[in-house]
Every structure is written in C-alpha cells, then in structure tokens.
Image (tube, rainbow, N blue to C red):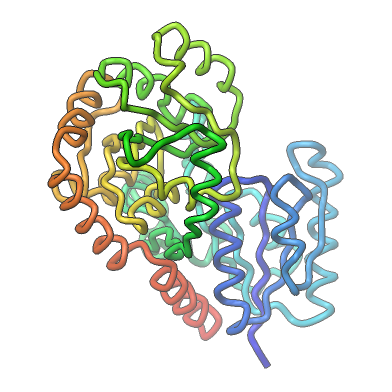
Length: 366
C-alpha cells in the first residue's frame, strides 16, 4: 500500500505556495497516496480537479475559532479513511499546532515558502518557534531563507534546502500569436522586457517603471503580468512617467509560459523574495534575467553569467544593466544559454520532486 501524505494549505489562491503544492501533488501522486486539506479560494479549481481525497476548512484569517476545530476534525476524518504517514504543511506555521493536537505521533514537514511585507521578520521568528516545537523537518526554498531561520535559532538538524522547481513548458506558438494580437506586441520588431508578479510593494515594480522610463527607444516595450492592490497606482505612475503607451499590464494570466515566450529579457525588481517561480520559469525558457540582490534571487541568477544582479530600490542601476542587455544580442544569447543550463542543474521540477520524495521516505522510515 502506498504511504499516505496529507497536504495542508492555509489558502487556495493563485500564488507561489499553491503552484508549488500543486506541482508536488501532481508529480508525486503516483508514488504516494496524497490527500489535501485547504479552504476554498480562486485557485481551488485546479486542485479540485485532481483525483485525490480533499476536505475544506474555514480559513483561519476569516474565523480562527471556527477554522481551528474544523481543521482538527477534518484531519481526524482523513485519518479514519486511511492512516496518515506524514503531514506536509505549506506556508502557515500555525497550522502545525492543529496537526499535532489531531495526530501527535505522525511526522510533520513544514515548507516556509517565504514571507513578505513589514511583518516578514516576525513571521520568520514565529516559524522558528512553531518549527522547533512541532516540525520534524523544515524545507527552505532558498539558502538565504535557510540561513535566516538558522540564525533565528531554528535547529539546523531540522532544516533542508530544496529549491522551488518548475516544469519545462510545452509552448504553443498559436497561443503566443494570440497574445501578441491581444496585447499589440510585435516580437519581430520590438525588444520586449517582461515580468510576472503580484502587483504589491514587495515586488518593487515602481522601480522597474522608473528604470524603464530612463531607457531610450520606441521599439522597447514592458509587459507586466499579474494583478494586485497596486494595479491602479502603477498604471497612473506609468502615465505620469510618459511611458504608458509602451507598458502593457496584462492582469492575471493562466497562460504565462506562452506570454513569457515573447520576452527578450525577464526582469525581477523584488524588494523581498525567496525562490522566485517566475524567475525559474524564465530560465526554463532560456531568458536572460536582471534581478535584485534580495532573498534567493542571487542564488537563481548567476551574476554576469546568466544575467545581472543589481541592488533593490535602485532604478538607475537597473536601467544601466537593462540597457547593456538591450544593446548586446550576443550577450543576451549567452546569458540565455547558461541560464537554461542552470535551470536544468538546480531548478527543474524533477530535481525538486526527487529531493522531496527522498525526504518523505526518510521521515516515514524513522
């Protein structure tokens, strides 16, 4: 009988935590019996389509007094259907308390997935506290996060580094052509800079707009894929900078790979980041990357070999490196080739799945 892994998520939205959990479930469900506990959300349809046992509970941020006992009850329901061998908690350390109260002796694996915003340091401190008490092992998705949690006092014996991995995309040229028409792009005659991110402060998009405004050339276009609270203010900033005719806001897209196929350069101007899925996806398509020296970005992008690394909040430096790449097709091609090789070595889905499965097996065996 297959070992039974229970995944618990704090939400089912459309972010990186959900994308990685979905990749793990899809990639490992032939090897293990996998069940899922998660509240409903915009990203739920992709999960609900999976042929696995699933239960919902009330999102804690809506009503913790209802959601907490519900989660314990749902864990026990799933345990009665088939004994759980391991619980993998994603993104919310506090959920481990419910797991411990429901199962006690079943091993708990926790993946941090990174924190953003003003409360990020406090969230890492709380992850350290909950993990030291309740987690048997902790996955960090980048070395920067690993080192931070160790410095905060999380037992190094529990820590494991497993980079986020993505599948190499199967691209559809017809769909890419549809996107060029939809967003009035002309890849044959334009240099297209692109990014994909939530439109919030942590992604540093205001500095990307400021950098782009410094670049000369009517054939330069910037594509920003994603949605978020700052959409209106970023569009207004593009207007104020006089670049709104060359900046395209696509909104949220399910079909990101076929849009990314159109990019000449991928830009990641983040102020906070763990291991960027969008960056790994760009590397999987052989795109040169310009990113900021925060979190795990400098682990993904090898400076001057697969792209450029600049300091965050520095639109002048960002503009200089973008201009250098725009002017040098040979450099773009070299960065693209080496970036793809780096993706295959470190950030492929196959590597992530195998390392995760090895950790599952070790934890279940002990």
